[in-house]
Length: 342
Ligand SMILES: NC(=O)c1ccc[n+]([C@@H]2O[C@H](COP(=O)([O-])OP(=O)(O)OC[C@H]3O[C@@H](n4cnc5c(N)ncnc54)[C@H](OP(=O)(O)O)[C@@H]3O)[C@@H](O)[C@H]2O)c1
Ligand SMILES: [Zn+2]
Image 1 (cartoon, rainbow, N blue to C red):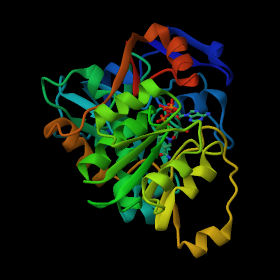
Image 2 (image 1 turned 180 degrees about the vertical axis):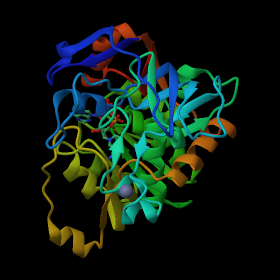
Image 3 (image 1 turned 135 degrees about the vertical axis):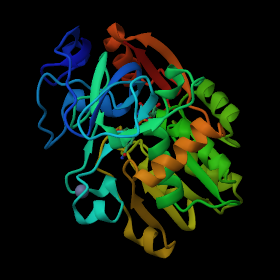
């Protein structure tokens, strides 16, 4: 099959587009004919290399897969070749204390398709059949591929970990990002007032179309601006993923009793915390990673079957343009998701 992959970690130039052997589904697995695959910032982190991440090379990335079931391994019922699906990228061991609790993304052997396992930047991929999610016959694959990882991540971060409720306010930083464009819509659906911060005026206008109420320049002191626009109150929840560059301003944007949820470190992982600020204003700081199955199914239903929230596709490129796709994300030129078609 044709695939996009790398044989060693490094810059965009390590990416290749060439032939690799077709994968064969093992017991409990499905072979998916990939029709579209969306990139995530994760693909850049994995390509560059992450501490402790040992990959089997060559590595095929791509966590957001939409396609058709092509074949089934032993022991699978309920699926037929030709079924249209997206794939839940979170894979738990099913046996540890956290999996037993239903918390796959806290699994001690947690894996992500496209990171710890071969992903979907290829014509075919094998995935656990338990991770398949059926999509409607008329839902375009290019749109569908832009949904799974970002909506699942945004749902858990905002609704589960952030406990966002109707009538509250939330700040979403890096508004043009994939997860952020999902989060703006979920926050809006939850009945919250949405503050969106981006470095780009144009992206802020698009964030407004998605439901953002207040637009902020993330190159400026947006915490001061929030302070003024909220009558010196601050917001209830901050969704932080930009990391080192925005952290201090994000934390300062919280009102008393506010909750900051972090799920990313795009600009670096080391951040300062003044504990006096945390205890005096009684902040909560929590982390969030991917989702459990229940959160995944809930948010996918809202995307695919109720159509109350929509994946945001910046552009669709042929898979052979894998380097250009990585470059777009690296330079944050995109708004929403970059999708590739094999
Ligand atoms: N824990 C998890 O489960 C999980 C899941 C998904 C993603 N993540 C992490 O979350 C982060 C975002 O992921 P994504 O896929 O949504 O990324 P993305 O689509 O590449 O978006 C990242 C956004 O961050 C903003 N940004 C980047 N550099 C910045 C800078 N120097 N200053 C201010 N803003 C900057 C940009 O927003 P503007 O262009 O609007 O300024 C950019 O669009 C990544 O680090 C990713 O690894 C974690
Ligand atoms: Zn487990």
